[in-house]
Length: 417
Image (cartoon, rainbow, N blue to C red; front, top):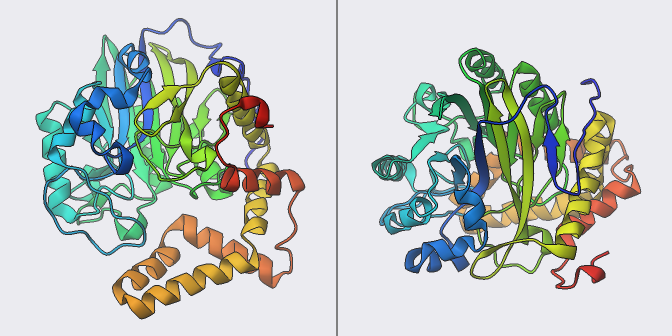
């Protein structure tokens, strides 16, 4: 079991300062999932700046901006058979990235190949034509896994981007994303640490919609921190998760949604945060989480009582992360909430698809077997059913999981508890 380390966040401000490093020379902003879909599709075509609301000034004040592009940007194409939703923007949506501007796009995620290899190639060409650098996916594993080295005002930053390679999209000798190869990530971090002032690792992984990271993900991120990363950023769960400072290395397990609209009135799918990171010659000087809410037409920075309430909640889900046994307990809380009925319903759902649409059903079943988040979830759930321990989890874990999965939006923070 990994050794216990202690977090030292200032939760009133959402900040952490590295006592080993002096004043920062440059500031980098890292944002989560961006896709011009659903409620944001048209506004990103008509007046793309407006979708960022009052976040735009904050984003533009940084020296470098990084975002996760969660879909291809092509005008035509044929969608692939896969386990989950299939997403696509258009070439005109590039304005939604350049208007900020975002200089770097991570592509290691579970949607960038939703319309196949040709759509990925065209999307990457479009990004490069608009002076946006990319990483995390490529035409083979060497290209997909290559770190990105960036010089900003005399500071050299290394970025590594990987994911779980859902739906067998991990690159090999064929195109794909930098998939779940923690050994290779560790090796890369150790190599680029010698060449850069700071190393940021961005990972698209974890179980959707729950407040805590699975134990396998926490162990991987902590191992990557030990290898020399200065900051680790996670996304994919579509809800905010907690922050851990692991031996002076901040780890944000999930930033939540960014420019990614979901038709829902569930509170935690409408809250996210981006990260400001100060970089000095000696490494990461500080970082800050900046929470916002996702409104029907734009994003909006949280202020006043609602900001205070969200900060308290993120602090609450961060506190168990300093003890690996509590991370495991939190995971067991999710498995308890999921329960035998949830396991049965998921199997029935897959079987129903197999009967009506065999290719879709097979893709869903295959993904449950081959992607670590689903595999770990189902194996742990089945094991606890067999052992008759599925209901063994602390109340705090069960209650927080239930809140993250069911709490509805309420306008007045005084009513939010």
